[in-house]
Image (cartoon, rainbow, N blue to C red; front, side, top):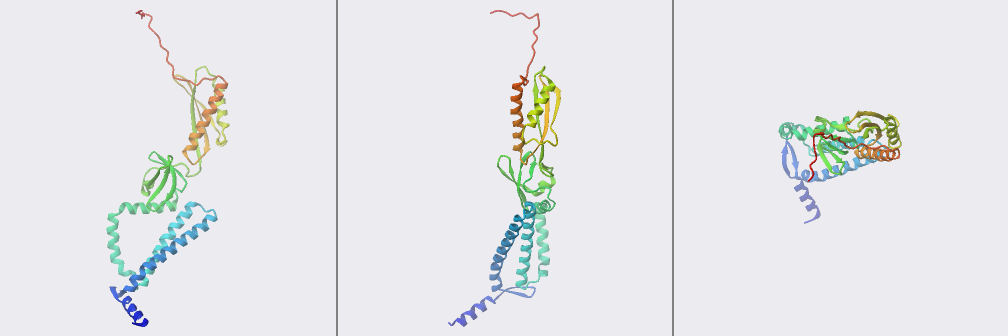
Length: 290
């Protein structure tokens, strides 16, 4: 068999009509060429997305904008790829109108949660009420947003555990975003000193211990209040602001203030109060010796 005969036989095999859609024949060659076209399209999409991301990163663009651009490019590329495949096969899109409508109805009833999360993901990426790097509190769970996908959002909890939260849950429920507008967080430290301690002096020492910390902001200014006459102590509270994206910054700031307060109180002989009770014995009681 000559080379020309082999080529003619292969060409005839590839030209064999497998199925006909809307009077448009789909040959075996078209079907075999589709996987190659899909692979090339996906590789081109991946390269284009990575190229645009690198360009935006070098310009120090917001990571949330980069993430949104990546998703939009991916969806557009897949859409163009599907239309190109149908056009290559000479299949009119109108031929799938009825079939796609039936599939959409069935898919809509069977995958309501998936569609809801998908749409919610696009709303989160477009409106940006939650951004990558934000510190969130969702149902007593606190963590940093690492990635916003089309179905779920990945959060790294303060203890290092990664959580996947459905996007619809972030839109439908109450979510505390500690860093929505800025990174300013208010801290408070409570302390009780023994009765008889000089209240004004105690307030000055608390203010000193707070303002000496490097993380304490001068604006808004720290505030010390004489909170209450407690059962066993004079109660004071100091509130101050720090710039922090994680809860650990709050705990560290409170700890530093308490350490410094303990040193200042010891220098000034001021006693931190502890629970005390006065016991009064009835005079009619007598002690019986064994």
